Length: 106
Image (tube, rainbow, N blue to C red; front, side):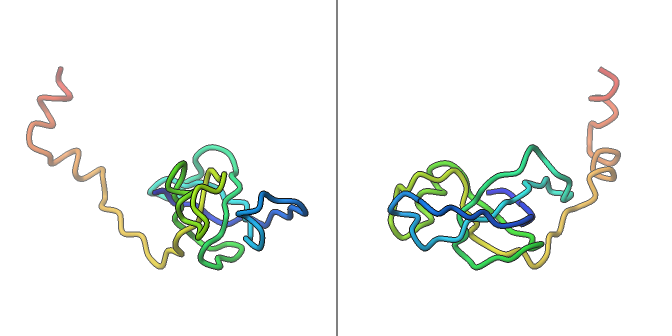
């Protein structure tokens, strides 16, 4: 699973049978600090996300399984809308971690 921000919509007049009636959204993948990672992706929306929403996605085989008709050819599927992301401060972990001085001295 990974985070993303919905940037827009994709309109396709012709789709493979398993995608008929499914909304496609343009998503920017994000890291845990919500910074962009890589390029924009097209993802099938299974949760009715909207423009600007912070979402979590699954990719590859899991994306194909997120739809009612399994094994539809998709690379990414939105499976949730994020309400809150809690990430511990990593800079304090590195400084206070046991053996941190030994690792940095090597």
